[in-house]
Image (cartoon, rainbow, N blue to C red; front, side):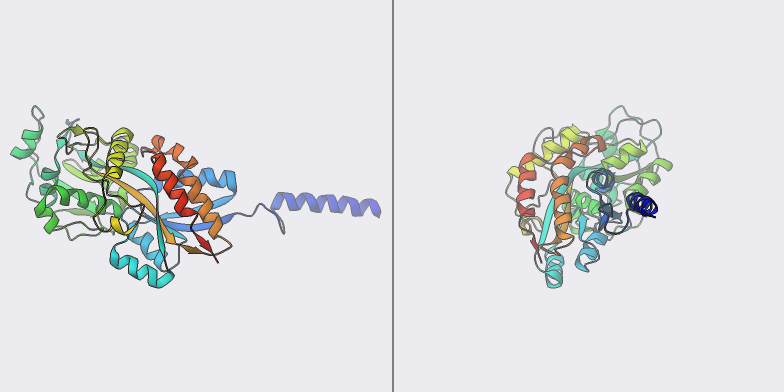
Length: 353
């Protein structure tokens, strides 16, 4: 009888280890979050690495920056990612719902202008020309202004089909902010927005991946996507003339140059000046700076629950430090050390209750 009891206890103990039985430390903690597709490739990589190391599931649902903001304000997500900081109106609504809101930059990267022109492997664009393509003032690939930018390139006598996001998108906000800086007419209409009213002929697609797929499949088109999506889809990216009149391709080096230049400037433009760690990285100074650069911000309430709040904060501390080692291989640029330090300092201010 004693032998049976000992054997039974051993078997039960083994079953408990195998199944993660009552009180087992193997149960996964889940952090529900989501928003910007801009950061999604990096967020998915982080999720896998962090789960293996910490047994914490970062359940990130990529449906656009507007989706992330809405679900943070309604308290469905612990944090939401947006490539556009909260506007004054959005900030006021969020504060009514849950108090002070923090913006922590977790990733910086390029918004690439991708194109599909059979036989054309290099394309140069300026912000002014790109703005007029999206205003539908330039509608043909062999328009004289495009030809002048691309001497010796056989641009087709074909209609240009530009693609845009069909949902509220931080990538769109970054893109339209840049075009608004380069074109006063674009700034007036459609202007800088996560969801602007585009003119007829600008076709909508869902997500960065939706635009990348549409451009790859359709000749004589162009669109704007976070660089990782262009690389994954293996579609060419235009070189853009920057403020120094240099034609620059999107890559980690040109993104870093833009970020470092922008952080030296005094930020006085809304909504960036409403948030201590928010910066406008578009149209930055410097010969090597790529002109369409943005950040994804983890946005969340300063007051967090005692059970999961510390888990979320620890993940974000990891993401802005050790997690940045995965940035370059996924075609982002690592956060500058100064920005990482400031982000971790602000994360220390979170209140658990």
